[in-house]
Length: 80
Image (cartoon, rainbow, N blue to C red; front, side, top):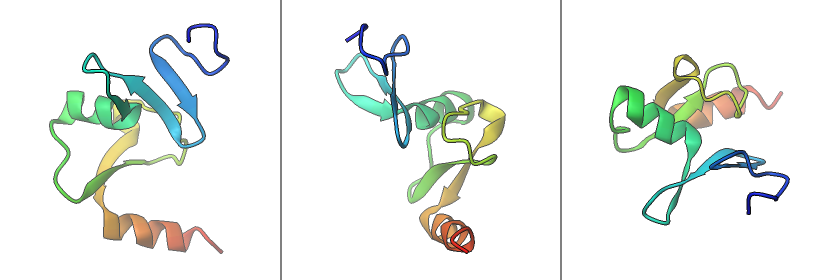
């Protein structure tokens, strides 16, 4: 796996952002992992949103928790 082009030392790059392999043999989006390590557990019904729109920028200052309804509004606003 380490020789795969998308392998970034424990992170795997996908079209929807980075994923991390957890010790429990499960995967998680890296943005959520960073958010929960810094800010605590993600509230139910919320998703991690990248403020600057760069899904590969997982800096804590770029991550906020928003509701799924807020995400739909943001996505619809950006369609036009």
